[in-house]
Length: 201
Length: 201
DNA sequence: ATTATAAACAGACTGCAGTCTAGTTAACAA
DNA sequence: TTGTTAACTAGACTGCAGTCTGTTTATAAT
Image (cartoon, each protein chain N blue to C red):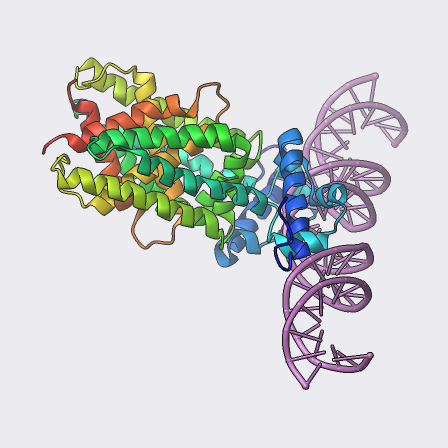
């Protein structure tokens, strides 16, 4: 591919090889059946290199998770101006959950959710949540401006509610063995909340 | 203490010493600052004993978590017959969350939530969820029988929604550093869901 | 050219949860 | 009593993530 950039840090190549190899192995055998030693051996590198480029084994999943942000924004911007904000919110959550299930997969999501509980830095997941939070916030603010929200809670508080729900839906799906899609598992709750929010008094 | 029971398996004593010591250490230094080796050393026992009585380090927390079930039932049975089912549900969730925060603590809850994601056996948490689910189910069934539920979803599905929400609230609280109580963090969502459930159409 | 410096890399090493093997003790059975 | 069995205990060992201590290589500075 178009190289000859300028310096072409050789490290990027290594990093990339590790990433690709690891992801392939994870998808073949499952995250915790793969060891870092196996990854570096298959890649022809070393632990030193691995930890030069990633700060933990789970970082590789965190890396993939990066795509989520772009997807969020893409969906967010795809809505027609005049669409009902609650409909936007509903569709947004459905697409989001579909994306997480199909593109990320349960194994990855479990690792993300688990590492957020265990590490104290887990920069990425929390950041990502922050940007998710902001999109939700924006949508709800819009709904609020149109007077569609029948409660006196702040938009901030309502956004938190929606975030909590999404996390609960994903977590619940993560710990249960089920064939139902994440989307279909989420619908009742999301719909109920939206109903509850619309309701006056 | 009144011994001289009959056989008094000596193992029970060891198990108990380990449990007490471990819990004390956990509360002093935090779960992951304490090693199993430290526990057994302080207890004057051995790894062999530890794993004879517990199948993992996190089992010690799982053990404490057992109390939750009793508390669930206690609260559940404490309600006057004629109380509104939704009010029961609301109070139930609030007491439950209060209990988890105050009696169990965030450290413990994080371990529980994390180990449910990682192990494949985690018998207890899922069991406990099942009994939580059943209480919720019973309350919602009661509401449904009284015609207070304005949706055509099955009680099963609605119970799942409530469970998802509770998990989301707890998980969200687990990964965020906040001074707000779990109860107060939960209120908006729980109230909104109840509102959404009551609403006709 | 020569040296300085910092990224990239190698792999030995550490820390810790959990396993395994072998030994000990307590109960009961013959 | 002696043998049998099974719970209990000990602690050495394994597996694996993550660290540490170099060594190599590229680039920039003199």
